[in-house]
Image 1 (cartoon, rainbow, N blue to C red):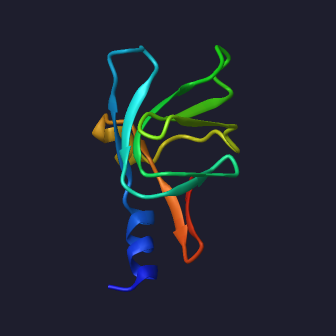
Image 2: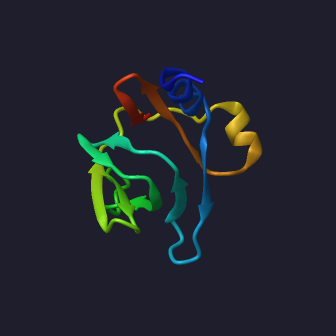
Length: 104
């Protein structure tokens, strides 16, 4: 399988997030590949994802393994795909190409 095909498969696969009991709004995700978020390259690992502010306008991605974090601003707010909503599980998606993957 080519590198490009692997990245394309990762782009179409959603990373499932498991709800964390530590915080009512925090989620935990196991992301098995490096990706870009907020202009920073984030390493594979365990992530805690939550809102950085009470206004829910800034999202904090905290890599628990590497002890690094990034703040990102959502570019647009839209409804989740119907299949995601029907599953009842939190999910995230990534857009990948030959240059790498980026949180979508």
